[in-house]
Image: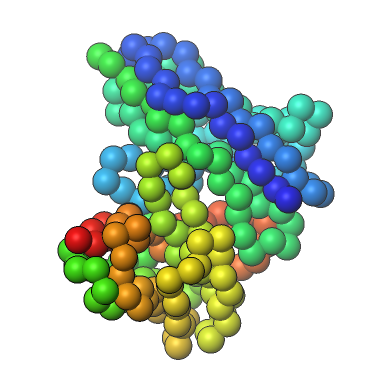
Length: 112
Length: 114
């Protein structure tokens, strides 16, 4: 079946540092890939997505590229802010599947 | 923001009592989901619905039932609450079953079973 593996957290960075959160997946066919963000006390919200190989999703300074050859969708940001502190979830959804598959989530803590 | 509300937002209940959580959407989306979120387990799917009166089980459905009599409402019932059901519960919606469509999540309900 489908699966998503994210790096364990927490990831702790200083403000303005470069961020990478790794995400790899296994899936049948050609899934769509997503990053969701969950701020403290809130539900998840979509951060970005990519629907086919080599697509790059981007939003709020975050980027991720759909790499079919390495089955990866790593999240990056060039300069993090304290306000980026949250839990980040990588997810996939295979075509025609009602049910997305989520990674366990990676907590990011950004210090001033 | 997608129009999804959950009620109640917080609830404390005793072991053995029935509990119903409500998810209400104003987006007219066909698919609705109930998840629970626990430390160390991430998000786990309890039940989902692919239309009015059409529901199916997720990976952790034991002890839970659902109903969907209208497009906009999806109810999650704990028939007899147990301490292991203490969790944060999230409702999500999705426009259709296409893989490219993202989910939209509600704000969550924190349930404590004493």
